[in-house]
Image 1 (tube, one colour):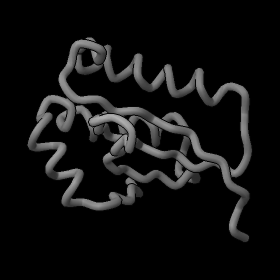
Image 2 (tube, helix red, strand yellow):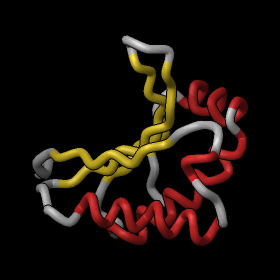
Image 3 (cartoon, one colour):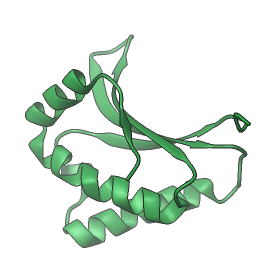
Length: 107
């Protein structure tokens, strides 16, 4: 699976702090790739909110155009994760989001 990890040391530190969340990352990435196919670029990094002491993982999925059903498809990914892993994501320590990003094709 193609996944670029930005600032890997920060991601490893987040995984060490929130191992339950870290254990879900491969499943989230796999289901996201299955849902959206091989085309979108995917990047994983730790987001640090500059106004609050808040850090979480963000999986950015890059699309060439907006499709109205993208957010529904992201919700479908989260539903599959909860069902397969038997977890309530809202109850877990740590946090991860899937964020759709839009940019025109490079070619």
